[in-house]
Length: 293
Image (cartoon, rainbow, N blue to C red; front, side, top):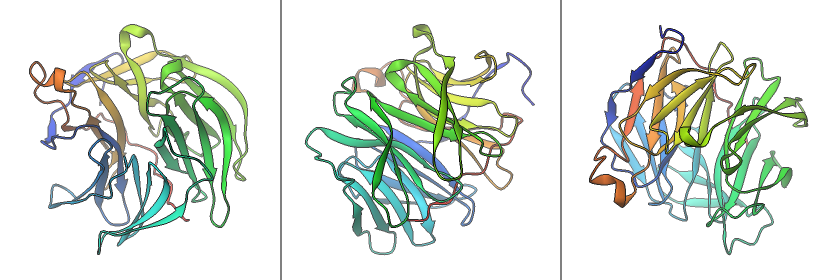
């Protein structure tokens, strides 16, 4: 188990060579890992523990893939939300979210315990106020739940699901909301502020002790933070600068899988950029919600 304020280096898990690896997920029902490469428009599935890797190219800046059943994923992309058939590689548009997609794309998202999709949007230049956070439920349209963000990113829930955590990366803050089963969020408050020297907060996961693990773009790692105090209490070091997201998975939810991005300017100095890393930090995670659209 990690000690308070301990720093450890996460070992390489996969030489993925992603341009913009993002949104790792553990599909516990089918014992497999899922992630995407936004820039390449690809979806990846790896059978656990370290089995065969499959990939699909739905394109359109796919930013999120969540398991629906053995043969289908729900994906978010430039253009809306679609269902991806893993058998045929085809996609079926579920909703365009009522948006014009000229300079918008979907970004990070998550499924809540009720099976609804929380998905954020951002402009390609991450313009201030250009994106929003939406809630999409079965048989209903996309509803704005948190408006006017620049780069909508990490979403997770506390153990028990009473608190939802959310970040707009360029604001450098993690915001907490009281979360109701009907999808209402209230009592907004800032619980963590990431200083510039630590990078930008990106994807995020919650552990069983209620601590938040935040991927730090430009920060060379994943920080563990206490939302009650805002303090960083542990750090997972990654040998690349742009760390994008993390999730807990494995049969005991005790493995933290971490995605990274590879800028061309970084590869000479940081050749492991764009690969995936994994570590067992001594604490388990909170189970992910199951998507039901």
